[in-house]
Image 1 (cartoon, rainbow over the protein chains, first blue to last red):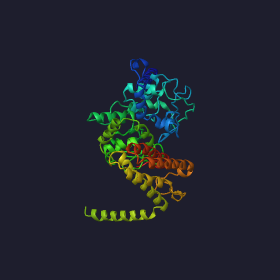
Image 2: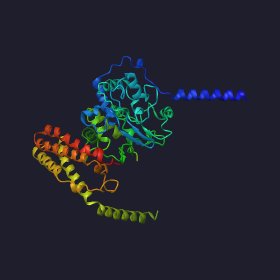
Image 3: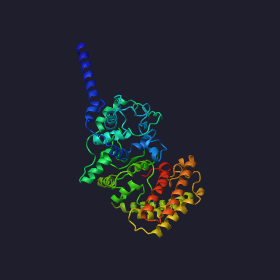
Image 4: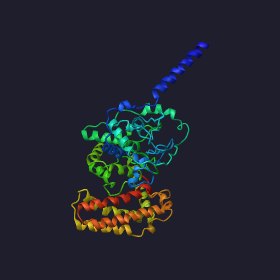
Length: 295
Length: 154
């Protein structure tokens, strides 16, 4: 009997160690970034493409205030409300004392400097597909932005989602290096990089399964709006009949082909895409048009 | 299969009746403000078409459209927005109840639209670049209201 208990205890220990090993938070160490020179201009482009300000700028921010990343945007989900934290340069309430490796780790691996998992409301599943050099440049740009001492608000989650341990398993199940869509031309490939890795369009435009993972079989087919009433529209050819030029012009000006304007959280997205190059907006448009129709 | 046709025509008939009922039941204030938005879009369509190079620039028509837009932005809208005509109460509108909870903000944005439209009206005849530069702030004003006060599309 004693032997059985010992064996069982040993098995539990091994199992726990294996689970911990398989789901422990991944980090990027400084040595892995050695030799990657940040490019501030590129970092600013990445900042607008990744849409950091869409969630992390203060709620009423307009114009230059979009660069004050004091947080506060709420994402209402079936798991509870996520509140975007302060990521300004304040050393206490923001990320002012983080190293570049810590920022890259947070953005690409979803791991905090103290080694915990972030919730995937922070779209690291997308950002993890980015070029490391782009995120190093982004980190350098973030470090040029102002400090703001607004304390971060806690997320408002129900049990069991308020326990972060399970997130390692979530990451194993849903974070992948694979692209959601094929890319047949160089332009679509560029558009895919911008859309899937940086702009993370799928995080709102693709429906999720019961565990909160993106349903890649219904890529861009639309989903409930996490930031208020209504829905995030289906932007596959099943519903969106705009031309590539229409989409590119919308991403620049916010005007639809009917000269309505973008509303809801898409307005903040366009604040970012309006600052990209024409070539990048056209590439996103080519990629969006290449996605298969889905109802 | 033989039931398909009567069922389909029955459905079509029901759809027509439903459409007629909906058209009749649209709150007149909602109908009026939607018509107003349509007039904005009609004028913006010409100006935006020129800005995008889809319509050849012409100073006279651009000025006329921009003047119409500026005039529209100044019309009294107080009877467009009676209490109880929000998206929680009526099916036919995407106007969020937040409008009535934060009227000063709505009025402020509407003031931004008036000044941006006045600039556009003054600039639209001064060449394509002037038109392009002054169209952006008008779009910003439209978007500012649609960001916080309109239900996201589906």
